[in-house]
Length: 211
Ligand SMILES: Cc1cc2nc3c(=O)[nH]c(=O)nc-3n(C[C@H](O)[C@H](O)[C@H](O)COP(=O)(O)O)c2cc1C
Image 1 (cartoon, helix red, strand yellow):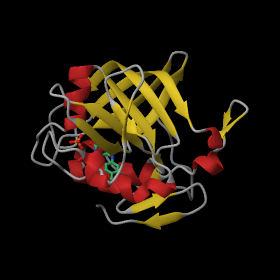
Image 2 (cartoon, rainbow, N blue to C red):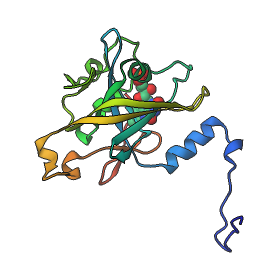
Image 3 (cartoon, protein in one colour):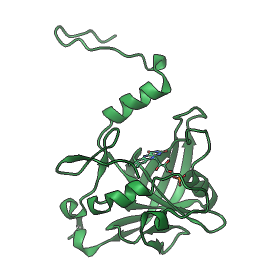
């Protein structure tokens, strides 16, 4: 039975099909918020390290432990290095972006040429994952080593996502945030993405220009 509007609670109805890509994006990033940040470390087939943040990110299963993040093409339509590397090497790391690393996280989103290292550019230390061929952020308090499970591509339009799903194989946890089997989120102090230049901590929100 079609839903009937409740008196006094009538909402505006937007037809998603009628919205432009840019309009839909704005609605989504304001609606699904705050979004956690996957700080993805990958390696190219020629051995270059790569690091970039992605806020279309979440976990989807705990047995097996599955996390996923989505990569949209660059504005000029080119594929981002993270997607290319994950397709090639079938693995990636995800480092947690704590508040104390937020400036470095933002800097690592710079569009560098393949082969240029965002770890160096952002002033971070690249550490070697123990069991997969990918680097992670040594300064991060929590890191997942993931093997690629599946990539689901949603098309070739501007804004079309490529959902990268990975299975967590190893977890690196700084002792300071590990409390008897639980993660102490106050000490982890993760940052989430809102819209525009706005971010959220678990206490408050703040603005940070990209770069
Ligand atoms: C906080 C933050 C979140 C981001 N989230 C996404 C995202 O979910 N998907 C995406 O494609 N790009 C996202 N970006 C942009 C990428 O980080 C950026 O395009 C980066 O240069 C990609 O790097 P790569 O070419 O080395 O993969 C985000 C940037 C920032 C600063």
